[in-house]
Amino acid sequence: MRKLRKIHLHQEGTHQLTVGFFVWFAINALTYYLTYPELRWLFILIAVFTTTVYALLINFFRCPPRRFPGEETEGIVVAPADGKIVVIEEVEEPDYFHDRRLMLSIFMSPLNVHANWYPVDGVVKKVTHDNGKFHRAFLPKASTDNERSMVVIETPDGKEVMVRQIAGAMARRIVTYAKPGDESFIDEHFGFIKLGSRVDVYLPVGTEVCVTMGQKTTGNQTILAKLK
Image 1 (tube, rainbow, N blue to C red):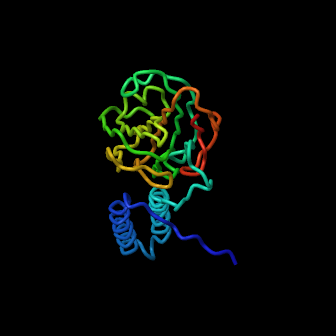
Image 2 (image 1 turned 90 degrees about the vertical axis):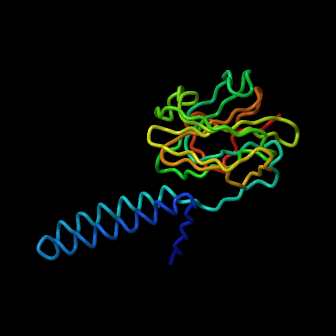
């Protein structure tokens, strides 16, 4: 008999899941009291609907424990999020580097795990948060117009990597744990984005890319690139 896996939930969902449970219970209890047994079909319909919605909420805040499978992390850039690669291109980065950088973007749907992992080992140099609009996260202008948080990390060999959390059309809150001076390690969370969103990673030009357009990524598992 196959053993059921334990569901791990992220701390960011504690309030929403607690309130959601009481709302789910109240709706179904009231519906049962008012409809059962004369309108049994209505009670079943509402119970199925509310349970499905609550199950989706649980799914959104799930946070499976993960360890990077490789033995060596030096020069490795891992995916900071679950999702799909939607951008691999050289761009002008206007906020911090002010020069050309290689940008890799991961689009996160509402069904993906929304915890964000550090992409590299190093030290956090700068953290900023900018309020903005809520364009759909897969659009190019989302990188510069949407609400976003920027984390710059300096690796042990002196290279700088930026990871940017971007709110999407549905997302309304970006949570960033990283602070300047913190040590960053692959396997550790640096933030969380609620609902659909996107994460951009900016790397030095010439970095070896290990993913392709449209490829699905697994946070803290998929190798995005290798720094030279």
